[in-house]
Image (tube, rainbow, N blue to C red; front, side, top):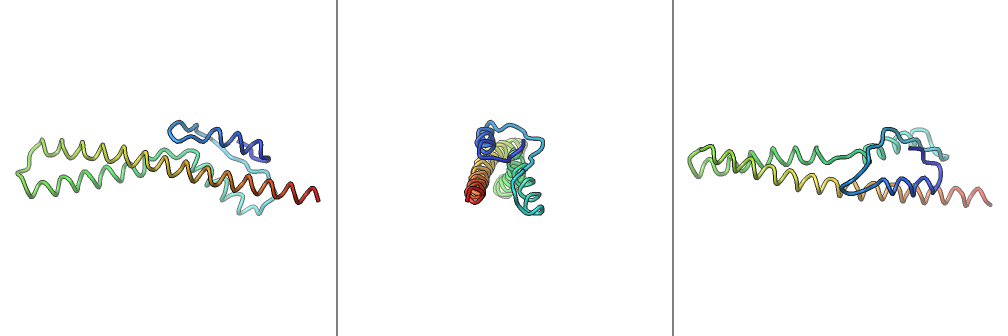
Length: 129
């Protein structure tokens, strides 16, 4: 994906979705800016576009699984049904965390693209003077 105009930003915004986001292999920004800033922004946009929420989901699964298992293991006798219930609690928490992570990255990506759109607009205004 190449971003050098507001039209490209609009296309990028169409690719941004909460639950159905397309995978992007590479982002190239071709507007006047510092090379370090450009690299950082390209990496950030690529990370946000390709975010799947798996990190948050994994962490939520393990924390909720272990906490549920340990909290009830002291109250009742240890059993395989407790492991099953802990697993189900972990799955539910993982799904919720994944959805929240996708929502957060969707909002962050939208904000970054809007900021880049404003920057492109400002550059075009300054170039027309």
